[in-house]
View 1 (cartoon, one colour):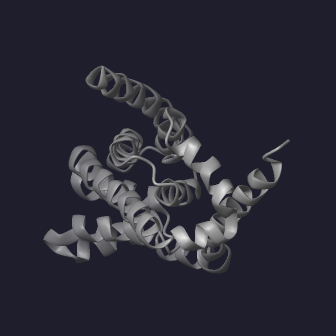
View 2 (cartoon, one colour):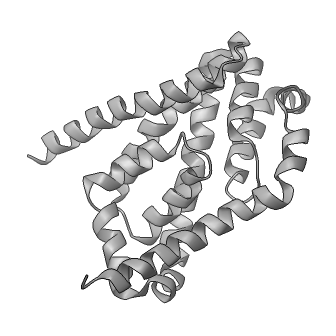
Length: 218
């Protein structure tokens, strides 16, 4: 009970981040979904010629501030490039998006975070994100709607160790990128299977990565 007030202030920070992420979806989400459906996104990427992959990466990065349907973009990259290279471009976009959110919040968001959560409230967040649990949260958040951006920002605000963050980010992004690119490439219409796979595989990948990090430290 001693830290209940600090926990409440930490939740205030989390809620503010979620509101900032969700608001564009509520305001413009339907419009963006109509423009960036699978075929529309594929046609737009193909109009860029040899830079289609770069356009896909840019869309995935812009998902930080715009309601871009990221999994649709990944599937469109699979349609254009096939599951492997489409997956590589999807992973690149997902990883860069997470890195940018992390560093922007780490470099410029600390004062606002302290104002919302307080020093002790933010310290509770640091305890979470600087432990192994924080790595799991980053890895598993990549396949969840809305959460990837908010979690990456929280990781930056709480100064999560860079090595742990990037390891978890990559572990979560790899299955997500390849699975949805494969859906586009193979013309599958079973996103539930993709979500199940992209939820399970990060667990395996990050468990392996965390084990290797512990081995290096010992």
